[in-house]
Image 1 (cartoon, rainbow, N blue to C red):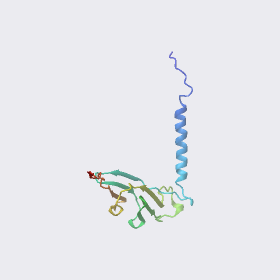
Image 2: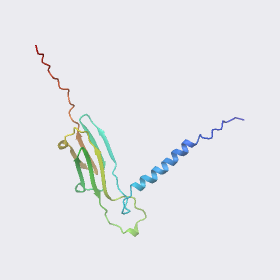
Image 3: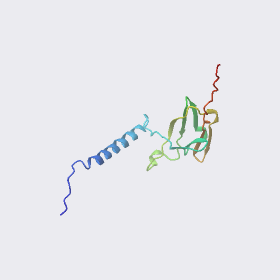
Image 4: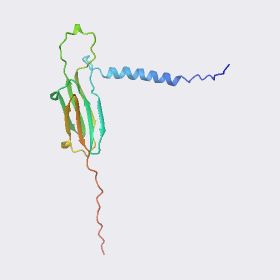
Length: 149
């Protein structure tokens, strides 16, 4: 017979993790619901960098170019828009509805030295791609010292 040492608090950490996940799931879903009862929509966004730019790609299926707004103010890039509902089927004929419609707003802080005029946007196949050029690195300024005789 093998003896197993009893550790009364061994499973407490995993229990705590499960409870935390349960609360996170509940509060994240509650946070995503707007006041009018419709689900709030937050498009998925990937942000990465290349040699010369910071790239932001947002998935916006079902959104037209005219329903998207991109603004930069106080070094915050705001992506706003709306996915409109297309009523082809009456509500009582649905078995299940998972696609969320409505307005969305995402905001991202940009580096201070970004030239806002150089930001480029491209919208193709439901993907909005924003290219934010990196600022040129500031080189230290050399100051000549004069010697007084």
